[in-house]
Image 1 (tube, one colour):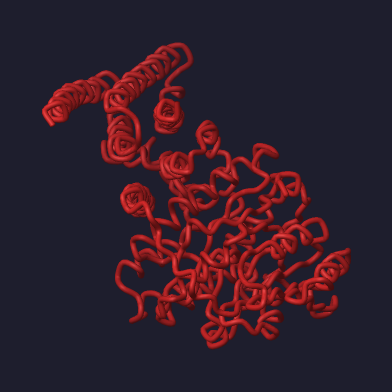
Image 2: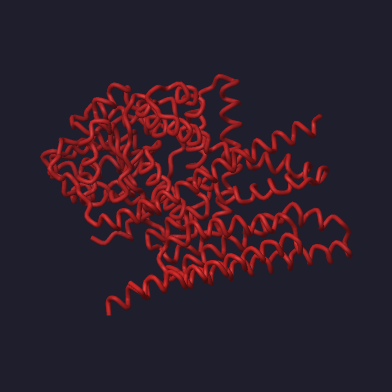
Length: 428
Length: 135
């Protein structure tokens, strides 16, 4: 009886893994198709005439090494400065963040600095963004992380999507600035290629759930206000807002041309902290939104399926581990043909749920389309990031359950430390 | 027009023969090695044909890469299974069990590596084409 239950469980897990693989395969095909169509179209039309007033929120907590870089980037934006309001939210910093930001605010009247003392500040990004939202006057609210460096015409590219009244938010592309730093930054860059160049692009062209990634994106202010801003009780405030936007009947557009450069984590310890926060936040979103997604009348069936798969993505490393645990004894005790065939799916999945959860073939095609010829050679190493994600996601789930049982607040925001090493890759 | 038609016919013939060879290799791996090896080759072929063939690069080069990939897969599996059988004779059946568990993972090492190499080869042929056009 127990063996039969284990067999059924193993089959379900294999089916789930296969579902994710098929999803990513469809994404890769869709992007290949989309790219060839764009080649034929050749000319991209963009409405440059639409230039509403915008507010750009930059939350910063102890970012003295990078805040100057993004503010310098803001001064170089080609968007009309009289229609632009840049708000730096100094979130209880104890370093020179405030001083540097004020240094930029003095000669540029469109840059403002909000100070939050150490009592109010340092509670996480969502809290800082909500403080910035109160001051924001623009029709469209953008947010950028302090370690990012934007393209000069990024706002024009992103704002153009808002000409469609059904669009509630936009998301630009994230590219790693300090990629040549070391193997960790190179692997993160590969994850980003898979996650943005293929995953986000495919979801956008297939009309599925395009995800707001927490930065390099913008919202209609009215919509954001009606949704009560960012939810401070969720660690993945970006994923939470993504689903609230879709559940409200709006959609999010992804603009691949709107690139912004980020300073990726440079060591495995920072990688752990960042992914742990993402995993836990994503799991919180799964428990918060799964039922709403299923019941929603604003979502089409394919959006519901994609939404559920997206919400459950951080459970996959745990499920792969689980399938190994029950698969090995089954394989040893019951050597059947179907079991042996299903077994093949587990290692294929190992390469499929890394970082941004893109399989090796998706990352490869993304790198090819980007013309990143040297990057392919590192694809086999992605297995290490996957293996590293197993304990990260497992700990996130265990901690989430423990905090639920004990009724404790588990939302400690472990900030990613930025070294400012990315500055050396910018040519002024 | 006629030249284009000839090229298309040549590609169809080439594709047909490549398909036959690939099918033989898969059948061979099923009988010589095991069903996992055959399934892995099928996964590789499916991904390669559907995702690499639409990329830039000549059809002949893609067919070459596909065939090389299949031969590597067959050799890889044959070597590992022979090794496990021989090792099992000396060190006991435990190694056979270990091989059975780790086999798909070992297979993925060549699949992913060969995938990366194939993309590099196609990208370099794309670069050569661009350079020729530039000059």
